[in-house]
Image 1 (cartoon, rainbow, N blue to C red):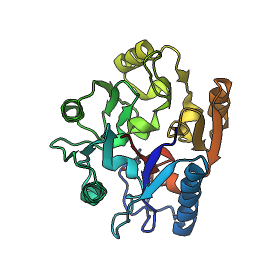
Image 2 (image 1 turned 135 degrees about the horizontal axis):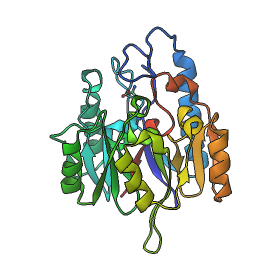
Image 3 (image 1 turned 90 degrees about the horizontal axis):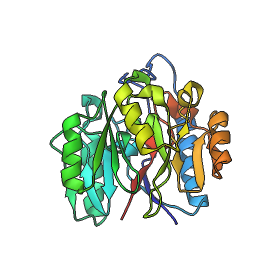
Image 4 (image 1 turned 90 degrees about the vertical axis):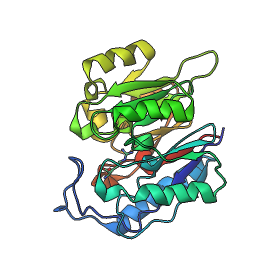
Length: 270
Ligand code: ARG
């Protein structure tokens, strides 16, 4: 089944501020290389048969390439973002406009702070919702109300894995007869959240510290192909052992801002 993604080219990409432990404005970034890596990622999706739309990037918003943070779309219903940091606040409105201009009729901008698919992961049956660093727990209840789907809250405890999508991804969505298949890094979660995850997903692929440290869990799966960072070779072997096809991309330049393939990718579910 083709997927529908929204991405934003990193034409104004930079690391001018530090809002997560990966960012160091003292380390030079190569904007051309970032754009090249992003283009390869976009073309990888297209080669796999998926639809990719592009949102126009804006000067002064260097993190706008991380489109996952600007909207959560389930059943064609859109919950916009409200960023935790002032540096990224203006991104939300550009994406809201894109949704409206592209025919989405049910668009709600949130009251509570939520960084969208950074912290919200749709499993096919329910919305996993991260908190601890960016998204306010009050936003979990708001997402349940706006999107009309069950929400399960999870608490993140490691500042390097400040968004849920740096510590967990869905390999294949739940269907009527089987639960979702996910991969996650347990140490990124509180003790209670780890218990919740092992109850919900007893058959999960359990990642280790090395898998997480190269942003291996910031992956995108279409249920068969798993697009993940080129360094994530050990995690790739684990998912391949479960019948998935690893597809490697180099996102080293974007990782300097604390992002990987999934961060660059917002999924539209109609
Ligand atoms: N520099 C960005 C930030 O700290 C990176 C966002 C990564 N996005 C994600 N979905 N994890 O907000």
